[in-house]
Image 1: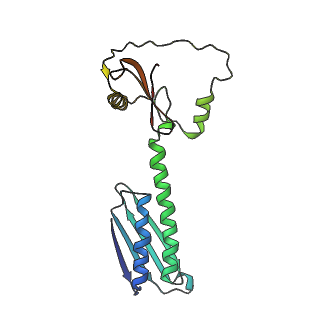
Image 2: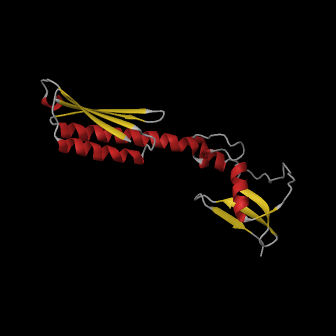
Image 3: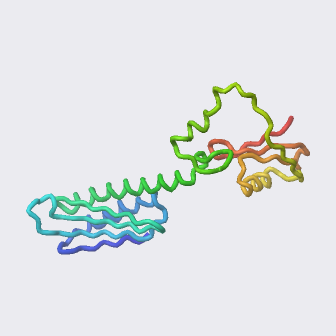
Length: 190
């Protein structure tokens, strides 16, 4: 990530420039695809002394641009204000990106994205009903012998949360499943 510092109508000390670079390098924990960060320090004539120094930060990401603007009595104060704003925007962008592809936000039947409000209703719908569960679909599969690693790979390729396979290590039928923590589990008969 490249960080450039520009000065317009002012001279900023090297300490403040180094502080800006140090604080803005931490932005990659929120947006790892940031490739260019521009920092502009501007001194402008103003009747209000709190608006004398302006610091503008622009973060160029792969598909997004994050911009922030802070004003203060000194360049350091303006820098602190703008960094807080840019970090909040980066956190918001990261949460949007994560929520867009988070596996728990998909309908288990259709794999369509489900808004947060409808997620609880989807999970708990039909709990109060006394209707007995019935088999609505039967699927036949050809099981070839494979080890647990190959079963995990097949499960990921198919995009399923579980996979039934003939375990070549113990010559028994086993089930590989994805746990809520993201790791894998293996069920095999004793």
